[in-house]
Amino acid sequence: MKRRDLIYLLSTVSLGFNFKKAEKEIQPSRGTFAIDGNRIRFYNAAIKKRFSMLMIADTHLFTDDHRGEPYQQYSGRMAKAYNQTKNFETGEATFPAACFQQSLSIAKKEGVSLVALIGDILSFPSEAAVEWVSEQMKNTGLPYLYVAGNHDWHYEGMSGSLESLRKTWIRQRLQPLYQNDHPLMTVREINGMLLVAIDNSNYEILPEQLSFFQKQLASKLPVLLMIHIPLYAPGRPVSFGCGHPEWGAKADQNYQLERRERWPEKGHTETTLAFHKEVVNAQNLIGVLAGHTHRQSLDVMNGLPQIVTNANATGAYLHIDFIPA
Image 1 (cartoon, rainbow, N blue to C red):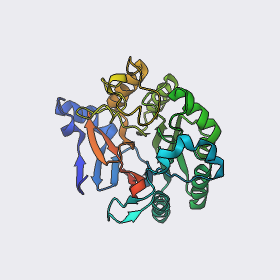
Image 2: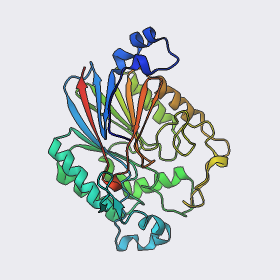
Image 3: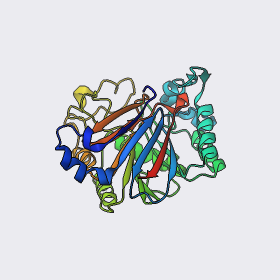
């Protein structure tokens, strides 16, 4: 995304809406937002005091040790995928662990109120990598939350459904990162804002996750949603977003490469489609932040901004400011 500073007044970006009606019904609860490179600003009258957050996704750490040797047949491809990368700003050679540490240093220097780790922090569920991340987060002294991405819990070629493998490796490896939070959904309230993270790392939403999200919306507080896989937006390919109407087995081009269960023939569950609809129509949802694609992007759906971050494996992150209107 080119560097720019745009403030989107929701009454003017919601194409197809009656502008006066949109201004009256949507703008007061959603507020406005601005983007300047990888810095996001949300303005909302319900925010009690200015604060900031740093979001990281797609670090793809490949740290491993002797405990991972029995699983090398499943971790081999991803263990080599991001050994060396290029910084997203300078183009200089770097690597994921250094990028993660640099991002945390920025978070600490700027005194953010929360660090959000939104999926694919790991390239596979390595015990050594989980321990390293936990130690790095402890050293910052900053509050954080974590939600898994599709690689965090995936050993390529291991038999089992996506749902069962996610459950297994969350329990056996990733559990320390959740800090006793529910692994599939969590929330933090800071200065009148609800920061909600939901695990959609298998491209689907469970009924309990939908109910959890609806409960947060019912609070009437402004809500920010963070998910690893972005939501389907018109014009985006099937691989881009959760909730795409053509998602399913026929569109799954990577299941053999990733050695995983193929997406279902029937496509998305009704719950996943209902979640997508709920998100796009929620008037007190101020935005959606996601990762997964490794490319920064912006989509505005029904006045709702969805911002995807570049990969932290290249040093990228999102700095989000929450500002009373």
